[in-house]
Length: 352
Image (cartoon, rainbow, N blue to C red; front, side, top):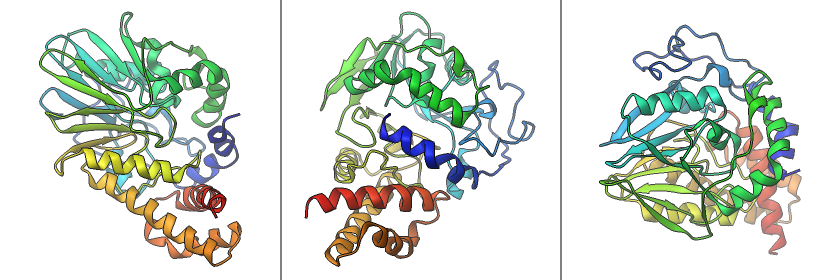
């Protein structure tokens, strides 16, 4: 089984369940006519503390971040992001003269239908393209609920993973998002447009040009970024989880590659760019600078520990104390001490 799944299977639920909170927000509207139409943050039942986040209680909202460019994100993202608590998936859509490009199809029918309802609240134009920024199920499982004729866009590595590991991945996700979350009806879908390493493909929607980029490994081999240069809006997927204090998850290691890709991403953007992260509210480029700073500090401190002759376990102990400035992320003890430090130690130790 993929290392991401194995690590999650052993550790994730206990770490995440211990930090879940219930947040009440006002002033945000769910998708009109969608499954959660009457399920506001004030009235819905509490989240299940045994789940990473509770799919059947997520309410998606949209925000126009540039003309005809909409971010879609959970209605509790602002409060939870600020508190360092993980939230459900974010994405968005772009409306052009000729049709719509969508970023992320979400986890299940319920959330895909919320995304579709948010789109239909803005336009009746056809959905032309659906971009999955990675193979992760909360970004791609909803593909089958989009209209026939929509062209799915993925990196070749994403397609390969889905076609090879779909059944095992769904079974894994059911354990941590609930067996009543609609995943039993899921079937793998093939992408019609496949991007190669280093791709930079432009999609024309009439009066809107949308670039889909592969900048390198960031969290998976197939991470895609959706960039609108004229509007200065970037959709990042999971490489940027949310604004601070969230941290990268080095589930597959490759700290140096992740850092290189994040630096490429930052260099691409103007200072006033709007960043729509993989699990949070729309924000600015500080959401990219923060994890870059973390990875740079992680690399420095692990390198120093190796130079001092410390073992992996001793390095974990040292950095649990020396990097507490990043402990605002509620799953810091898990993602930092159990994932990021050991993975980085193993990577850098090989180079000594």
